[in-house]
Length: 423
Ligand SMILES: Cc1ncc(COP(=O)(O)OP(=O)(O)O)c(N)n1
Ligand SMILES: Cc1nc(C(=O)O)sc1CCOP(=O)(O)O
Image (cartoon, rainbow, N blue to C red; front, side, top):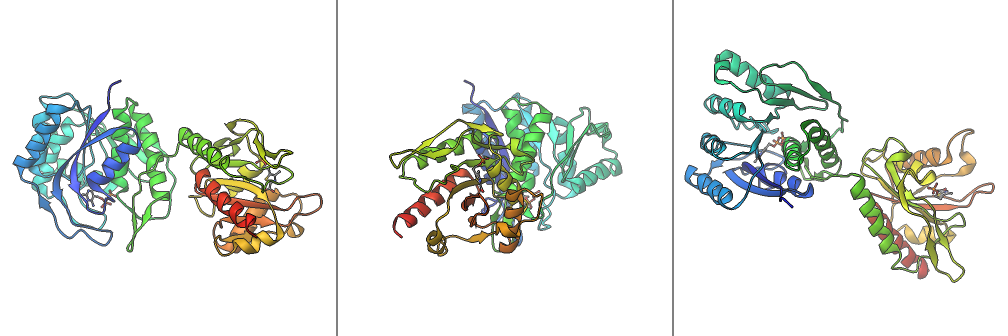
């Protein structure tokens, strides 16, 4: 089966939040083999870019020669470039058949200028040979104004796609400029270093795997959203954390979580049975939530049965908990209900964050799961590890364990069972 090789050519960010490391992480999680060539060493963090040292042209060329001698490359994704790098990419483009996805990084989000007018003039030749260019709105306007001001339209005989990136992305082409399609996005209020790199390398990776342009953009958008939601906190801000949550990933997590559960003597099973569920990112309905079509139920010998299969749309109660909790913390995508025990809650308070709701305070005509989860999260100021209630008329008291995925939830349940067994 053909190996998908993507060649990433860009600058080196030692924090891995942007540059060739961020690009390679993105390609790797998407199942593409990342080959990387460094054009410059750029000491930086989320506070500033401190310097930029260009790699000598000879070394860039030797990196290119080493790769093309030994690998077939279907997509080249470019980040921070210098004139030597552009000259060499165009030289190899004349001899090898690969698509170029060009992310025109003109300056960093910390306002360090990577491109002067002399280099931007050379970029125009690279744009002309590119399949897709991914500027943000400011970079797009700078590029078009530069072409107009310097009367460079004559240098452009091809018509590459342009994706003007933002919360919503606008697909156009360099020459036509009319909007072909707008790809809607979701705003997450968090400034994350490297999102542009992750987005363009995700699109390039999906193209490398044979996806069409629109599908690659839409899936790339999902990667960036997850990478922002699960971004890594640093002292000054956040670093991108390339992450891709799709149905395959959710089902794999749930299957492994059930595998882990079967390894323990799980006895905290409520009369109604337990379910365990995990959702896609920012789920819109119970159809975006996978769970058991049956339940986890006690057997007569003190053990338990896992009844049913894992399917999307299989849960009602646990799905409502996840759908509500995501509004307080979009990282939380999983939950499992277990039996309530009076003295267990106290024993858990040292290791777990806990909130609760009281069914006696429940207003009429509401969904208990939605109202209760909302009540507990607002009381806690976010999403706790555990939400419990002490039951009500004909309603069994319950403990609900929440987490970023079902593997994390089951590991919490294993810890809770251990604590319960030693009370
Ligand atoms: C080596 C390197 N490459 C790219 C960038 C740009 O990253 P950032 O400043 O976070 O901008 P976006 O990727 O978010 O557009 C960089 N700083 N260093
Ligand atoms: C019946 C019930 N009540 C729960 C609660 O948290 O109060 S969890 C639960 C069982 C799980 O239900 P499902 O399979 O619809 O997600």
